Amino acid sequence: MPKSLRDLLTQHPVVASAPCRIDAGGTWDIKAMALPFQRLRPVTVNIALNLRTTVILSPYKDNWVKIFSDGFPRGESFPRDQFPLTSPFGLFFAAVSYFDLHGMTVQIKSQSPVKSALGGSSTALVALIKALSKVDKKMSPKEILHLAYHLEDGINGGNCGLQDHAAAVYGGVSQWEWHYAKRMAPFERIALLDRKGQKELSKHLLVAYSGKSHISSTTNRKWVKDFLSGRTRSGWVRVNEVVYNLARAIKKLDWRRAAGFLREEMALRKELTPEALIPLMEKMIDQAWQTGCGSRFAGAGAGGSLWAIGEAKDIQRLKRIWEKTLAPVKEARILDCEVDPHGAS
Image (cartoon, rainbow, N blue to C red; front, side, top):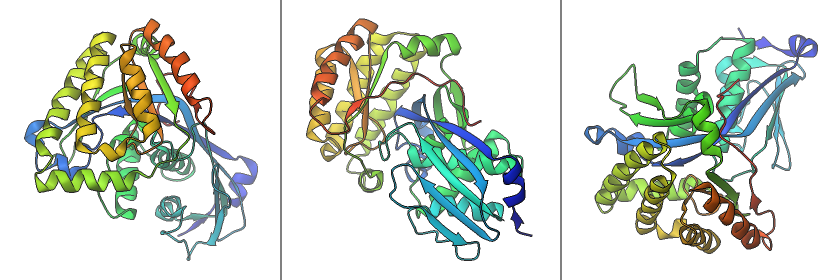
């Protein structure tokens, strides 16, 4: 039976949050690529950032749900039998529909820029499922991850990856191996750094927003299509090898080698899809390389954010250079953030 949360939330609003991420090796977490080539041990490395997305559940009229979010001019409210799963908030209405709840307002607040390629929609979805599970079905991290991924993959018609949800659920610095053929264990998570190592890594990271929002679906579709056709497969195989090397360097706290492997991964992606680099980001990536750092766009690129890794002194020098580069660009900025050891909570 559907359940109204109005009275419960009048007494106690419910809050949950989850971290966003930066990544390398993303796209290999899409099962259209990973499953046929499971023998290659497809891998992704991601780093959770303490730019968290928060979901607040508060009371609303019975049989209705209202959803609104930072960065969107208007919210949406619908009766529970008319949730639009194709609207801008369709993914979140789908989560509410799964739990069969109503009588609430869902407010989404993000510390990262909207459409910044930091895994925003997936992070918000994980935070929402965490919030809903607090008042209805208690769910383990694996259950939250499973539901979030399949909801987003289903609503978007396939070719969604799992890594954005994974970073949001677990936090920290992780190497993910994707083996979707294993029914009970579609991934293996290897934590690369403990809390001390995560604090150290934060000194060697720099993250910036380009001021241009991005839409990942276009780039992802091209990546997958070209991979499946065989035209770019050898390049993707090399990307996978490089990301394993990047993971080893991070685990050893070898920032110079990590920078070199990130430069190599970015160079391969530039060959695969040069259109994923807008001129500003290409300039900033070149600036990172000139200072001895490695840099790449976050997610699928074509705007959004980029990040760099390197020796601490080189990162500080790069920060000053990037600040000058971004100064004339509206809304562009360095993002003040660190590694987040915590997942959804």
